[in-house]
Length: 392
Image (cartoon, rainbow, N blue to C red; front, side, top):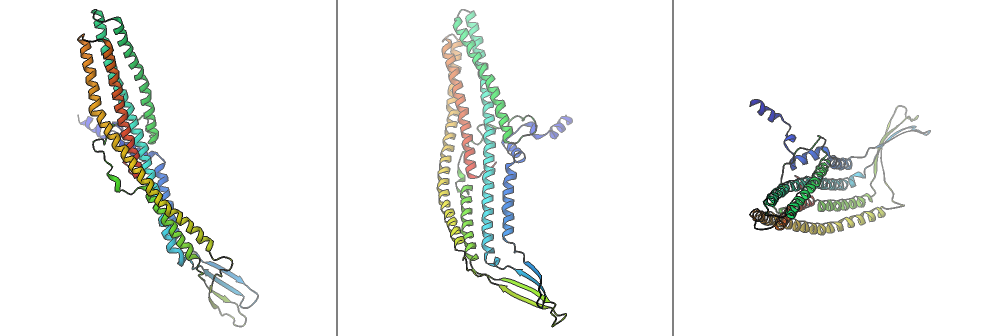
């Protein structure tokens, strides 16, 4: 007993089953999207540090024929004092955009994983349904054979029951292939490299009872990204406008080797003032102004688009949840009861085979439709979460 307990504790948790959370954890390790998103943020962070750097000075060392003949000059640009604050603000906006893009990338990956996970679960649910229907069909075949042997049913009824069972067998074989394909797709979606996927842990009804779109106050990545672009445009305009101001460079150095004053070194200090003769930076400002105006306008467009998408996603989420609940709680039990009563009547000799086969087929249609409704709900959840930037 102790050995069994120790074996269970040491067993790889993935071998016990794969939940949606486990699939997400695998995707974070096996897919390239997380690394790409983090790299985008790191690059923007590097840009922020770069925007705050002071430019290096230039060093001039020269010799002239006139006294003093030795010259060493350090030229330090100072115009960064005008633009550094605006440039840093613009770089922070780029970082905010990168973070919004990263949130959207993670959310899109989470939606992909969720769809693949529940699609695989839906195919397994369809397979289990067909297995159950196969058992019912085989039971009907047995009843029809006994009734035929007792002279209470025709050969047509026995053959019709056998044909229905064979049809279920064919559907079941095809569904096994679909399950294999769906599990393979899930493995690709999460970057699974551990061999065959373990059994899936979860239900198509996950989250159904608590369906809500209460994240309406959450920051939506597409709006955050547009706002960051607008901030960048405004600060880039501010930087371009300040860069028009002629700001001097500082020169500090020394001169030596004067025959009239041997051994003496002279200090040099001065400024170089830009002279805006050929251009005054008006073109740069005009370009920055246009870009800032366009980015500001896109914020309005992003808000309008986001509002429409959120409303649409919420409608689909609530609608699919309502239909899935109705199918689960009303349609499926009704179809099962109809099939049970038809089978009982046939077993008692009160009806022929046709009503039984019709009831079995209708139950299969209803249950498959219920599975599709549940899958549509999970797909709606994935779409809503992707829009809102939600991950497991």
